[in-house]
Image 1 (cartoon, rainbow, N blue to C red):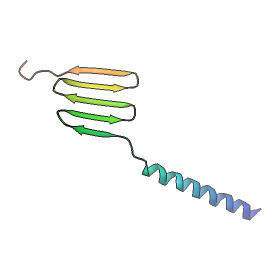
Image 2 (cartoon, rainbow, N blue to C red):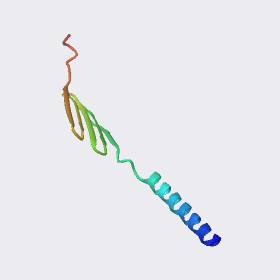
Image 3 (cartoon, rainbow, N blue to C red):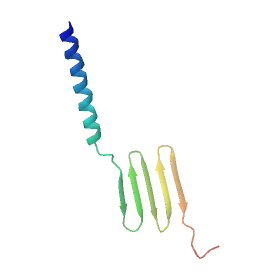
Image 4 (cartoon, rainbow, N blue to C red):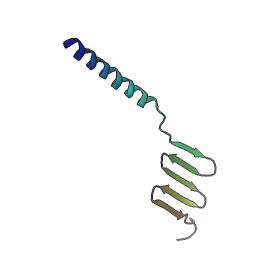
Length: 73
């Protein structure tokens, strides 16, 4: 019985260690690009900023903020 318990504990440690290694090697999925503006994409979220303004999209959120001209006070 002690051998069986020891084998089960070792198997659990190997499975948990493997899961941790796989989780660390997974890409986060966040992408950032800058051409004529800035665009950030993450799982479920997107933020875009360009000369027209900024747009934020996430689950249940869609916000567009127009850019204020620097000449106006």
